Amino acid sequence: MFLYSPSKIDIIKEEIITHKVVKALELDDNRKRELVKKLVPGFICKIALNFAGTIGSETYNQFDTGKYEYYSYILKKE
Image 1: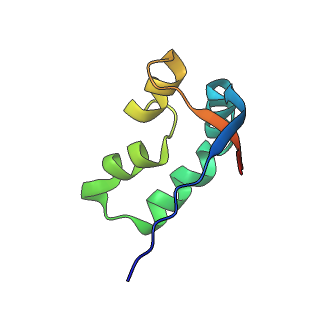
Image 2: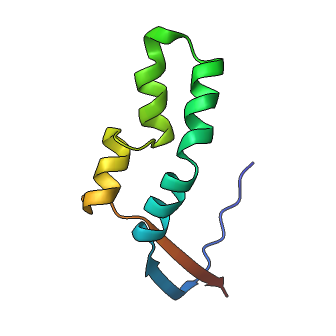
């Protein structure tokens, strides 16, 4: 049996951190590419590189242009 108890959650801080995410993707690009090259079959490498957000991928480009945004929240449960 599942008992649901609603609780109040306050947003203490909200921040758009997209620029930090883009920087992290750039710094980790080589490592991710090597892992994909080593572990992923060739016919799905492009999908894996996109999933990993490597530079030039659709995912990376969406963050880089601001079409996708990444948020950070600090929440407090009362």
